[in-house]
Length: 142
Image (tube, rainbow, N blue to C red; front, side):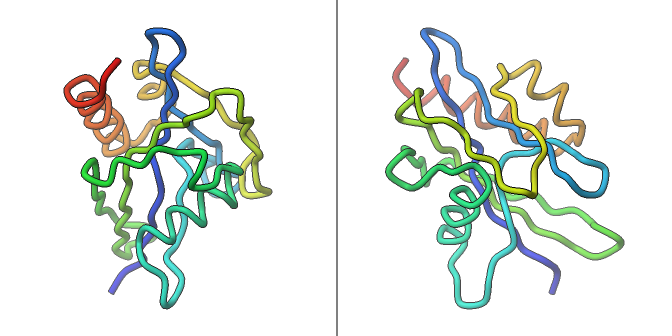
């Protein structure tokens, strides 16, 4: 069995615009992605997503509106080993709440979809961002 990680694609609304949180890793290729992390033994996927979001971005459950029915699973290889990443969609409720980065990241950006997809260079992550953007357009009041 491969590694499993969970997190949230976090968005905020500024007037009529939707922006997505991407964080730049301190390791490997220093890629940009939403906050996520590996599932600890005895932890549910949702518990992992909440813990990792607090550790990596400083947001707790009360800061977010979680859309549990908006879920995306990515499967890919890391160093020739399978990895599964589960993302749920979450909205930052209080736009004045600041991102507090962990030492695992060197930078963060709030970006509209087009720029978020350009910044998130992996195709499956770009597809995930577009999937959630469609979900927001189709299911969430503006």
